[in-house]
Amino acid sequence: MSLAGLKSWSAQEKNGLKDFCLAQAKVAAILAVAHFGNIYEPAYPRNDNHAPVMFWVVNAILLVLTLVTWSHKPSSPGRGGGPPRVVILGREQTEEWKGWMQWAFIFYHYYRVYYVYNEIRVFVSAYVWMTGFGNFLYFDKKADFSIERFVSMILRINYFPLLLSYFLTVPLELYYVVPLHTTGFIVTMITCYVGFLFENKLGWSYWKSRTAAVGLSLLAHVLFYETSAVNFLLLFSKEYHFRFQSDKYSAWMGMACGLLWGKIGEYMQWAHGFENDSRRQKATILQFFAGVFLIWIWYALFGFMQDKYSYNPVHPYVFILPVIGWLMIRNCSRYLTECHSSVLEFLGRNTLETYVLQFHLFMSHNVQYIPIVVPGSGPDGTARMKFLNMLLCGSVFVTMAVWARKNTVVTQLSVVDLVKNIRGAVDTSSTEVVPATKEETVELTKMESGMSDVDKTSK
Picture: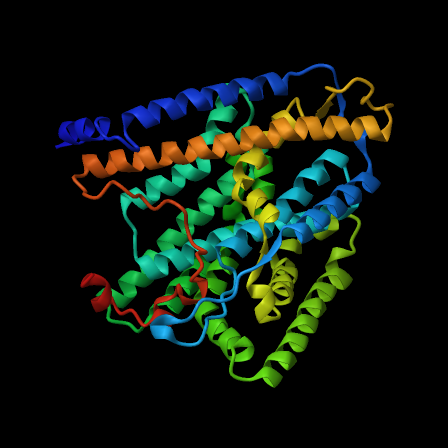
C-alpha cells in the first residue's frame, strides 16, 4: 500500500514529486541568498541605528498606504437569503491585523525603539493568541484531528525556520515565536480532541464538553507554569524559559475566546445588524469607548512601565486587555467589519517568512547588524541615504519572504498529499492547509452553525 501510494504521488501532475522537488530547489536558492545576506559586509552594529523618529516616519508611511488601499466589501446575505451577516475577524481582517503588527515589530528591531517594548510584547502575544483562537475554531467546526492536518500545520510553521536554523547555523531560539506557535497548535488540537471525546463518548452537551476541555487545559497550564515544573524548559535554554513564560496563557486565552466566539457573533448581529439603526449607533459608540478604556487601563496600570523587568512578570495576565480593546474598536461598526486594507493584508499573509528572514536579509549577522548596500548609508550617513538603504534591503527581504512562503506552501501541500496517498486516502486534488479565520468566522463554532455530530457524519 505504501509503495503504491508513493508511486501514485510521484505521478501526480499537481502537488506530486515534481512540484516537491522544484520547491526544494527554490528554497535552496532562498537559503543561499539568506546566507549571503547574513554574512554581508560592510555592516554596522544595529544599536548604532537607534532612530525613534524614523520608526514613526515609516509607520506614518504605512498609515498612508493603508488609507490608499482601504476598500469596502458589503456583507453578503445570510444563509437562505436572510439578513447579511456581520463578520468579525474574517480572513482579510485577520491578515490585516497581523500585517500592521508585523510592520511595527520589524521596525522596532531595525530602529531600536526601546520605549515601545511593552507594546511589541502585546503584539507577539496577540500572534500566539491567534494560534489558540483560530485553531480552536477550526477543530471545533471541522473535528479534523487527522494525521494530515497535524503534518500540514507542523510543516507550515516549522519547515522553513528549521532549514534556516540548520543551514545558517543559527540557534532556533532566535526564532522563538516558531516553537510558541507550534506548542500552541498542539495544545489546542489536544484540547479540542478532549472536548470532542467528552461529547461523543460521554454524551455531554456541547457547552459542558467544551468548557470542561478548556478548563482542563487551563489546569494543565497552571500546574506547569505556576510550579517548579516550568524549570523543565531550562533544559533547552534560558531564552525558551523566558519566552514560554511570557506567553504561557496566550494560546489558552485564544481558545477561551474561540469558545465564546459564537455568542460574540450573536451579539454583533444583534448590535450591528440591519434591524435597528438607533441600536446600531449606540452600540458603535459604547463599543468604541469600551475598547479605548481597556487599552487605557492596560497602559495606565502596566504599559507605562519603562523597566521591562518590572513589566514582564505581569504581561501574561494583562496583555489580553489591549487585545480585546483593539478588537472592540476595529469592529465597532458594521462598516468597519466590512473594510480592510489590501497592503496590510499582503503583509499579514507573509508574517512567518518576514519574521525569520528579517534577521538575515533586512538586518544581518543574526539581527545584530545593519547591512550597508547604498554608499554613504553607514552609521554616520545622512537620513536620506540610510532611508534609501533601508528601502533597497527591504525590497530584497520582502521578495524573498514572499517567495519562501509560496514554496513552503507547495512543500506543505505536496507532503500532505504524499501522506494521503500512503494512507490510501482519496481526493488529493485540493488539500486545505490554512487554519481558522475564514470569512465565516462568526459561524465557525458548531453551536452557532447548528451542525450536530449526526449532521457531520452524514456528509
